[in-house]
Length: 468
Image (cartoon, rainbow, N blue to C red; front, side, top):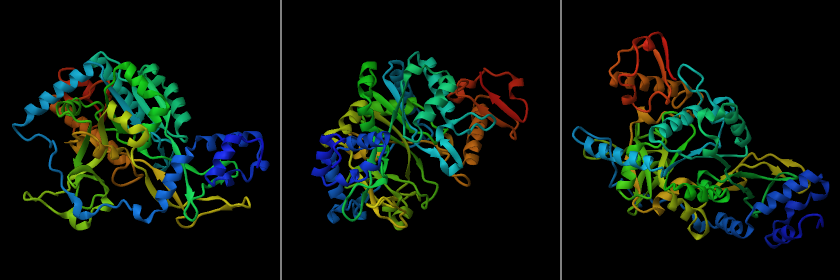
């Protein structure tokens, strides 16, 4: 065994039957050896051994018994006529939470725009209907406007990945953090976990000097926050509530006061925004109950018959589509970040190319390995009083996921334009229905922010941009 490798690492690898990771050690240069040694030391082998055993345990199948699934029994639906008072009161509570400086925001931004033909972090993707305003700019401008409105500093915790971290930092610096104080932005990297072969549970090498690692899922957020000591930062700032969203949705209403208010009023530890499914066949996870406990059911776990099932009004029984927007108590996230209370691990059978014992590269043409990840929505069944709140799809969920068709740049830009027209109409303005309009969050976070503030000449032309 190579003596130049840290002896404690060597001993641990031998103990767990993973010392094959060092078989090419003598062929590596110093920087390659350092990289491999750091990767090996980052793996909690005692815990990882349990995960490998779980992957090979045929009795550990986590599929959900369809008979245990039932529709939601409680949810806050969009208000009907005469129900606005509860929403007004919730918004007031939410504004008070923001005024008190108890709210932070979390952005999951580890993905690249590969499916869009955009070889950069997805947050850098231009989605403004008129300008090249990026997803990042839209989010940061919302935080600037919210901070100014409430006289507070809302810390922004952004989880990147190995693939996006440095380019995200460089982009935000080049744009002066879009006017937001740099000291209120915390970028930290998502964790990774090794892939193991599906025959013996051996950790795979992607290269002679590098372990085949993959992101540990959006649920890895909790351990990543813990590693970066950001829970301590939240405590220091008095942050009690975290508003969570993902990078691909430019229509998100950050730190939505109504959602915050309902969350606090109902004493929830986690609240989840949903939209009514477009149709029974829409491939989206739904909020439902399993043996009376609220959780998200993946569309693949819901039979076609159940997905089409309707209630007495003719609406879908399983209607509540997950859009990955949550409000979560800091205490809950801390509790689920480490130890025995950590989120469960999901195991996926995937194709992983790797290095063979003779040093040659093996391309996988069928699933040959297990990958491990955690999902943030597994917090829901572990939380006290989980809450579901419906929002309008056209107002708040128009993500950029696909190059063409539904949920594409074209549909997202069209949604932003349509929302701008609605807001101006609600604020009392007449605008050419064929005009393309873009509203910066610095000008308005909601229709009332536009009322009595615009001059007629600002609303003329085929392309209208309302910004400072």
